[in-house]
Length: 62
Image 1 (tube, rainbow, N blue to C red):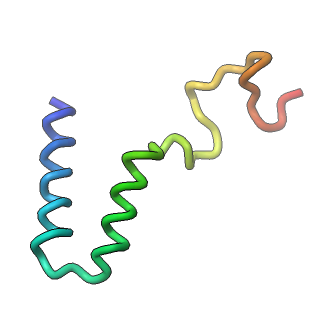
Image 2 (tube, rainbow, N blue to C red):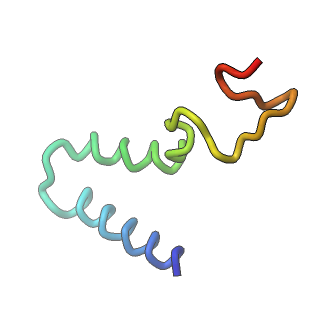
């Protein structure tokens, strides 16, 4: 179900960037494209998937 929603949102975004006269279409294209390369978890300060191990430490833990 989540995949279908993602496809629907992607199709609407692609239609908007290509067909509709949106302001700064290059900005929107690069924003969407960077979201496919760099998931939002990268931009969050602390990832819940990272447990402190010798190879994965959280900031401030010694």
